[in-house]
Amino acid sequence: MKNIHNSFRLLIHLFFLSATAIPVFVKAQYNSRDLYERQFFIEGDDTLFCRILSPLHFTTGKKYPLIVVLHGSGERGNDNDAQLTWGSDLFLDSANREKFPAIVVFPQCPADSSWSVRVRSKNTDSAGITFPMDVPPTKPLQMVMNFIDTLAKAGTVDPKRIYIGGLSMGGFGTFEILWRKPGLFAAAFPICGGGNPASAKIYGRSFPIWVFHGADDDIVPVDNSRIMVNALKAAKAKIKYMEYPGVKHDSWKNAFAEPDLLPWMFAQKR
Image (cartoon, rainbow, N blue to C red; front, side, top):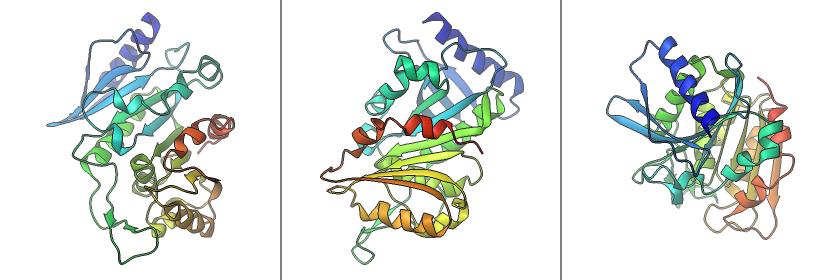
């Protein structure tokens, strides 16, 4: 436990040495029951709650891949716990930590907000949702983008190996952050989400992305992913698509159980 604690104390120290901006980290009490450290990213009057898993055998001066996972709407809040409900075990697996060392971040969205800007409408395609691109991001998504930039400037993150993924609301957020930060990410894995198909041309060309959805999803219609997959194909993305027959709105269970997910992701480099 002590090594994990000290590794991110060092990461934060490196940030302070190189920082010139106002944003700061505040370290919360270490939870010995959990290897994901409780962290806060503070920017003015805004706070982003985060849980961060440090690389196994953390080495000073080495740059590591960064993985950011956006949770679904059911995990919103400010307890800094719920966001670990889905997906966190994959990165805690001892074999995965040994084979795929990385900095893994699970931020938490407040209960009254979202990772993405989207509007439900009956007067649109069968997916029933529109995604305006002429409005600012939600505050939580903006905070996530700023946090990623801050970590990258700290010198511990490999800028060519930053990955983004998420489930449900986090799947929507994944598709949105890709066009808001084109050229930043090495790969993405949106799960049962959706986005504006017009955005695919902004980041899609040659971009590695693995999309997941349950064919019988009764919360987020599968057409949301199908529309994005078609748009990404048209944009010449390096796309993989997994649609699970008979699966409803819990396709993240299947996605995080895919044995090729981590090998595929870590093979991608910007």
